[in-house]
Image (cartoon, rainbow, N blue to C red; front, side, top):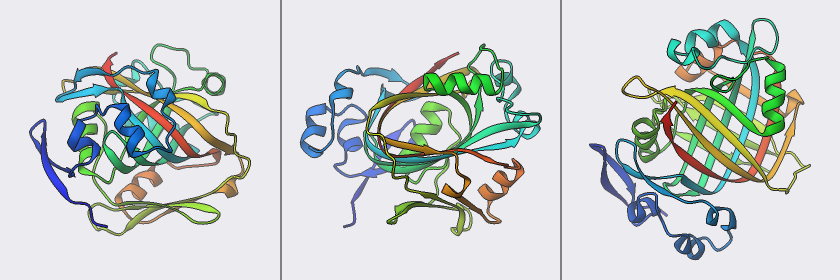
Length: 299
């Protein structure tokens, strides 16, 4: 079934959106009663506790942005520390640094998200981030990582964030200062695995393939995880934003055979190769989560 699009203006950008979709009708502020009637299987109890505020983020919007039904897989690898330091702007490095897990090695997180139903309709996204300390916080490498893990409060610097809708791209670049571009991202499930294919935006060929195992020992105890990022806005000011996720089904593994990353000669593959990835440290399989993304604030 082909969806029909309509064009709207966001901060001077002509953006195609699903005609009659959530964003077309409500611009990030749909009443929860509408969500309840359109998606009766979604538990909205958590969202009822959260309050939206009108914000100006280069265009009028509401914060937080709600993601009602989503899936993700994350693989955390060691990477070359010098390269990570080179990629983070000097202004950001004054406040946060990559966590060094052993001499010369930092950590990056590669995450594939599938947002099945959210305030900006549905889309897929790939996040590639350097794991850092919190701004002004201590950086004791593995100890800081352990502390973040125990408190479910993670910090990072986002290197790459491709998405597969123009709406997600424009909102992310203008409103959140994030390194987004538009490309094909296929997120699909087989009986035993999640297969994510990221296309090269220039050639249209498969650039990166991430295949991960569906883990069976799922916990259905809801847990809240905060992911925060530090970056620089269009005016050169340091900003920080964060998302709180409510994980409804989740499992993790440290076994390297749960993740298979295949790189090609495409632009994202070439970038990932430059990070000199090493050992996979952790894999997270989260087939069901909800999220609230807060607009960035000056640091």
